[in-house]
Length: 488
Figure 1 (tube, helix red, strand yellow):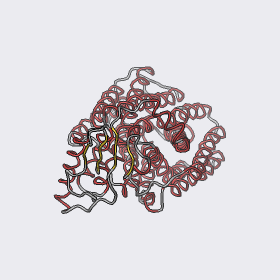
Figure 2 (cartoon, rainbow, N blue to C red):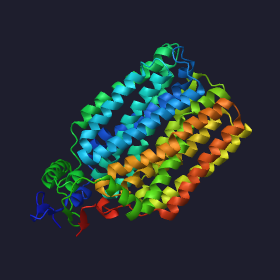
Figure 3 (cartoon, rainbow, N blue to C red):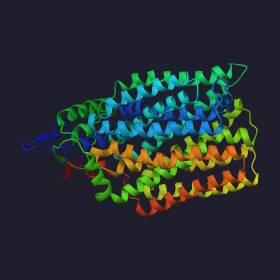
Figure 4 (cartoon, rainbow, N blue to C red):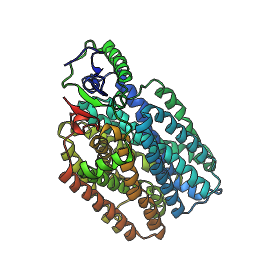
């Protein structure tokens, strides 16, 4: 095993080279560098949570806005527009992230998000609002692909599962912030609600400037550099990381596995993606698609339209919606934080199966209780809080699974593709369907929507039990061998 920085790579003149970059990254103790990665990149989910919650919490005010006056169906359609934008953004920026690198895309996608979010605050009708929401979604969708892949490539293997869940779970930290912000901007005693909901989008977008500054100090993923034949650059980045970690932790432990041999090749083509997903990794493709689409329907159907349920069936004033969104968001945040470490200890397969199954069973029960009128607004909120404690961990694990399933060369594209297909199949349909069901005003109709979501979560649980694989504590290169590599 090599432990001396600078001794880990070399070429034999035939296009073949060896590097111990993966082993050296995986042996690192947790340090300030890893905190910087989590903070600068994980902020994506906080921004997404803030966006989604603002729209959910502000739905009543937007519905009543004299300048927009959107119907329930139109509000559902704008949620779908956001998700369509996220699908397009994920595919386009995901393809670029595998070709251009993770770091460049960090800045492009964040700028798209920032500009579109601010523009949303100046929307003048349904079409402008829907357009700006679609562009905001495009920025967030691109972030999912580049950021998820980078985090998995930079975090040590033994901590990869819990860290990925923690970071994805911070979506709900943003949701909690959005819920509290909604209480302020919708309070007529503080600000005119017509100005308040617009200011919320403008301020939310402007906060991205802080994130841009944080990301200036992050390096390109050494693993991305490595698989693209830029071993000298990868070596330089790892040396820098090792120096910063050693300053606080002293001598570093030796790597626990050997070097990886690579053969230089061009960028992965769409045919490489197709061949890997349809032929060599078909079971993993089915698994990823199922997990992503089922959780997307469940989440987006319920969360994007919950404010409408509260105002229509429980007569909750629009300015008080934030009080109900806050516990919902905190329950979602707690799920990955409490359960995340078990995905590295108990294992991916049993934990993913259990969290999807529990969420499905509890959602079915809640759907029946809602239809029967047994639940008050607070009891309904308490039920969702418990359900999504488990569903949040399950949804975060879906992104983890897709990222771990495929080779480094196509990782960002794989995340983007499954996010896009899953969101298209589950997320875009869900809000529009529920908006239509809510507008009908019948609890029994909405119950069938909840039962569909519950059934999909149970399908995902069964699929994970059948096709799930062990990735806990294993190097990414071992879980899915890069197209240009073999383990020594």
